Structure formats: C-alpha cells, structure tokens
Image: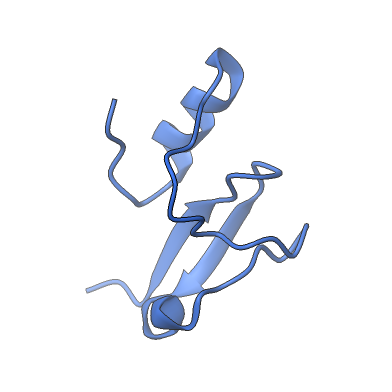
Length: 62
C-alpha cells in the first residue's frame, strides 16, 4: 500500500505528494497554498486534462 498520493492542484496545476494519513486534514498546495480539495468539480482544459490524467493518483470522472 502506498503511503503517499500524488495530487494535481486544481488552482496552479502543480503536483503535490500528500501522505494518506494527512488527507483528512484538508491539505493545501505546497506551491500556491490553495486547498487541494475544493468540494466542487474542476473544469479542465485540453492542456490541464493530460496533467491530471497522467500525474494524479485520484480517479478522474469525465
């Protein structure tokens, strides 16, 4: 079992490594300090879609 998840920030598109034990603490992006989980759907562009698909460990609903 992995101890870290790779999450793409919905605000600045940077990749964050978050320990699974910290997911319930509402983690913020290490680059822009915005919340990684907004509670809302993320609108992706052609450019950001591939980054989320290829780099995030979370499932993507299209």
